[in-house]
Image (cartoon, rainbow, N blue to C red):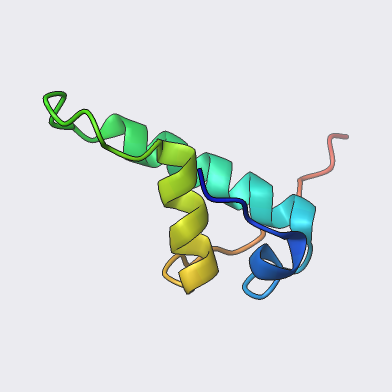
Length: 69
């Protein structure tokens, strides 16, 4: 299992908390795609999403919350 340091994930995100949120949402997107279940050595989706984030392959934007009136 690969360990991602906070310095690695903050290169492409504003802070480590935002990086984890972006990676988690991207893992949910990856989960929607069909996968080949016969591969036993497949990486976990969270690991794949963190690798994509640290490589700079994920584009995201922060949308401010709307205030409820």
